[in-house]
Amino acid sequence: MDNFIVSARKYRPSSFGMVVGQDTITNTLKNAIARKHLAQAYLFCGPRGVGKTTCARIFAKTINCGNISADSEACDQCESCESFNSSRSFNIHELDAASNNKVEDIRSLNDQVRIPPQIGKYSIYIIDEVHMLTLSAFNAFLKTLEEPPPHAIFILATTEKHKIIPTILSRCQIFDFKRIRVEDIIYQLKHVAEKESVSFEDEALHIIAQKADGAMRDALSIFDQLVSLCGKSISYRNAIENLNVLDYEYYFKITNAIFNSDISSVLLTVNEVVEKGFDGYNFLLGLNNHFRDLLVSKDKSTLTLLETTPAVRLRYAEQAALLPVDLLLRVLDIGSDYDISYKNSKSPRLHIELALIKMCSVFGDLNSEKKNPEVTAVQQQEVEDPTPDKQIYKTKPEPAGKTEKIAASVKSPSMDIGKTKENQRSLSIKDAIKATAKANSAKSGDQSFKPEDSPSQTGGSKPMDKAAFLSLWADFVERYSSDGPRFSSMMKTVVPRYDENKKTIFFEFSNSDQRDLFVNNYKQKLLAIINQRGGNNGIELVVEVESTEKKEIIYSDTQKLQFFQSRYPNIKEFIREFHLTI
Ligand SMILES: [Zn+2]
Image 1 (spheres, rainbow, N blue to C red):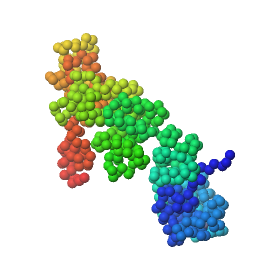
Image 2: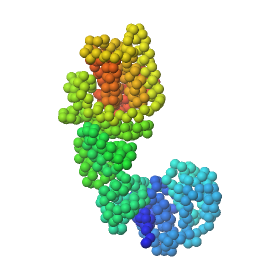
Image 3: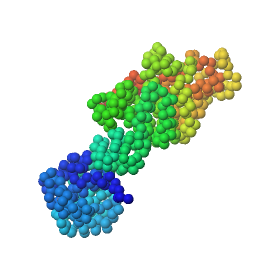
Image 4: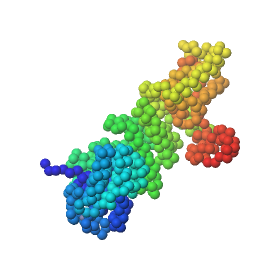
């Protein structure tokens, strides 16, 4: 069995010219060597696998080379270079601070530093993971770093610059290594693949480069892993299957389904993804990134921000052309909201599904405008409604929309979030409502607390009065208060208004999300309670969103201020009194 050397080691750059993606740093170091302006301490910081230690080694080799070339590269032939290349150089000392982080280790280093080099001009000390040193070790090191012997050069490397004490930082020349760009990683991967005579599909290398997240070492390890799994030919399909990367096809597919408000297809795709063993949360993040990429594809000038192959870029451009920017922003907004609240969700799958259903509803409006044949009866009515400023959902026609059915079937009984703060607050509101209702019913001698067995459907029986409604409402709030914070926050802002004469209950919500939650999940339940109490003699539920929300989306600080001023006129006074400005 011949010795297999991992690509990360085999193709480790041995000269500045071979370092990938850190041109600024290598040029600065080369200039320092050419001008003989060497500092005594350097700090290389940056994420792992981007070439810090490699650069430190090349730098160390080059400054000790007896025959530096015109463009400041080591000759690789002199005695110093040869001893370095065969790892027997006495001039270059590498210390891993992660395992040598104690004061004693640093003290022995301090002793060692005083000994001048046998060959070459400099002794170079490369201290890796320097942030792992204990505080006392740092302090022991400080003295040496302050006044090192002229032959000593320190190169400290760390992934966590913020953990280095300021006294150390101030004594070092600091170099910040960047994550390596996807294109640069691909370039290097292609080079390695050619050397190893591995054939590849461009998109497969893209997947590797993206997965490596800016680290060359990771990219090469992944490459090795794939070669050992798939042999001398790497295809896109191999790559996504073996690297557990979610195929972008899913994102294109689900975006299409969202665009068509095709909730069934959306839910089936999620199911497929989950069954393949992918984490729902990563899927949501991936989808958000997909929307971001679509947004970027809307404009030719930002198209370059899309890190993918030209073929895939074209597909992004095609899909982006179908989606209006404002709607794209809205789904992105929903995606990021659900991303933030994911952690607190007790039912992660449902959480993802709700996010997607909501995204569908964004495009539902657009589709109904297009007079899509799939438009639901409820939406149709909304379009035909003569008052343009109000989105009204009426109960009477009642063929439950597609959205409603599926949302109900998705709803899991395990949604109980327990007694959160939100919940407790909503309880107090509920108690207040109940108290009012009891007081009212006591006054009017109302019978509505008794269960009624024979609800009359033909109308004409006792109409529900205000107190009866309030009591019923309180029962409704109590029954579903364990549904979680979303229900609670919805209940905090909505105040139902019951008009006995018009037999109508008005609900005004502060935003369309809450309205949708109510319409999709709770409207039927409330109606059921009303029916149970025998109060439904043609009572209508009218659901509205406060008009401020629909007129415009508030973006700027000025708009926010205007909004608050319109709600709370005292703010104007306040601003004038204290001479406030934005
Ligand atoms: Zn040399």
